Length: 408
Image (tube, rainbow, N blue to C red; front, side):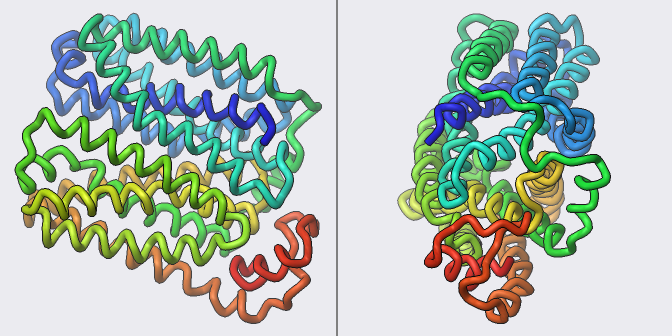
């Protein structure tokens, strides 16, 4: 695996740590910014909305930028956002800081995924995406607790300063560890990039990704009240359970990364089916501690860990274009937004268990969104599989499995 993939994963880790930091620092931020806790919650929403809508626009602006220069510019913008957050004099400044950081983070995710595809052989691209996405998993497992601990001991400003220092350090590693080129391979004109988005199969793949993440985050967005109010765990034990959940995501992400290149569609189908079962089980058995913990870890194994297979499916259709990958990430973020908004409405109307049944419904809808790819895969002829740019890089065995499973 190229060293550059691990360096890019560090960048993802830094950005995810900043994204989740607000969730761990809500009381301190509310006091320091003279705001209410719900207003601090809106900072998370602002970050996500900025990712969904601003990230693709920034990616378009960087289409013709040299391969190494694009992530460096994004690091600079992200650094500005975190310095602005660390020095915020009031709530409006913090809100602006989160928007700036969110736009840069989304564009970075899309460009990093494209770089991973360009820096690795086709047969190991899924594994490379898994390494990159481990930055996301470790951000949940380690970044959030670290930011919370720093904020509790040294103040919330120190947490954002720590992220700023981490961002600068990772930027230097990127400068040394990512090869340069005139521009990213597969990056064309804006017309070419937009042309790739005309494929209906691509939008169906985007929708599947939204539903996968949405189903998972119906639980994760409300995991604290579910574990404390339904299961009866003390508040102090929730961080330990989240660490266990984070460890499960690292394991699941690694396994899916090994399978994503050849078995993307079966992996997605299996993950969605298991996610539906685990969420339904939790809705029925949340009052029992041992089953609840087992089902929580099950969702950790098959939820966000589908990322490598999701990316593999999208790249088979749309190639490794930065805009395609950034728009894909926007749809992933949309899943987070929808789960929190619809989940809140479901809880208000029917109680906490309703949000888990919402997750089941989204997982089932995700399974249904895979069905149009099944007949296409059956009609394909073995030995003629090709990637989205018309190349034929894999060996014969990979071609056969690709044709039967991916349908591209």
